[in-house]
Image (cartoon, rainbow, N blue to C red):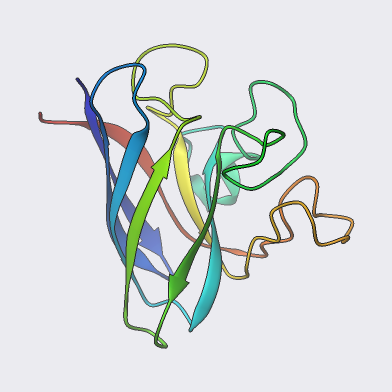
Length: 154
């Protein structure tokens, strides 16, 4: 089965790996990000693999089903809604360890290959914050770092 990798650049840096046993299995997301402030940070797959204008050209959250924003375990969510990663110190290494059922590495409507992974400045409120941006972005703030998700050598 395919494996994927994303090298994150910007105000934060890191490398994130994606692994999927077969097309029915969840995708396991592992790796690390450096340079975040202590606390939770939104972690999303965005629709385009375009970083020509930094992270802004990556577009909105990857949302092929045209749903509202939600958390990774919500029945209503964008495919790209991976929730939060949490930094335990300022500027140190933040470990990433997520398992997600919606994203896929195999060709199809939920494939994330060629799209952009973005790390945000603020916590993702998982669509429940009551802010005007809660249902679109989780009010997760600025895009601190991003990279295109590409196929990795198996």
